[in-house]
Length: 178
Image (cartoon, rainbow, N blue to C red; front, top):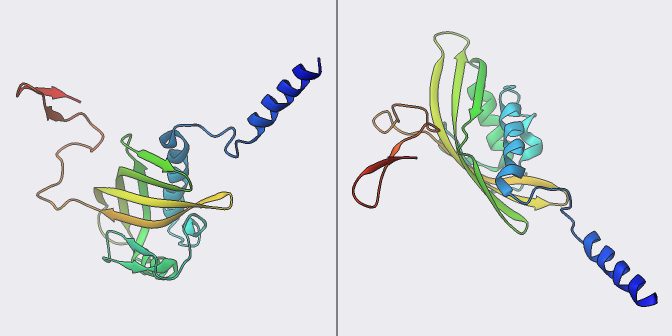
C-alpha cells in the first residue's frame, strides 16, 4: 500500500511541473488570438493600447510600412501616432495563413493581413501586407521584441487575397491547388 501511495504521489507531482498547463500545445493555436489582440489594439489608432504587447528595451528594431525603421518602442509609438493623426480609422484582419513556432521562451510568427485605412480626407486605402514577429516570454507575458511588417510592391501584389488558394508546381510539372 505504501508503494502504491508513493507511485501515485510521484505521478501527481510530475503532472504539476508543467508551467504551461492548460496552454494549447500548438503554438499557432496559442499565438493567433494574441496577435488578433495586438492588431485590435493598433486599430484604436492610440499607440498606448498596443504598448502592452511590446518590449520597451532601448535599441530594439521594429520595421513597419512607413517609415522604414523604428528604434525602440518610444520611437515606434511616436512614429505611428504622427502617421495615424491623418486617419479616421484602420481595420486590420489577419489572414488564415498565420503560423507560429515556439522554442522555449522565444517564439516567432509569420502572417499576412488585409487592411483598410480611412483617412480623414480622401478615399479609403486598401491593401495587403505581411509580418514576421519575434516574441520573448518575460515573466508571464509574451512580448514582441522585433517586428517586420512590409507590403509587396504594386507589381508584386497578388491578384487575390493572400489566404486564397494559389497554384503551386506539382512533382510532375503539373499545377495543383493548395
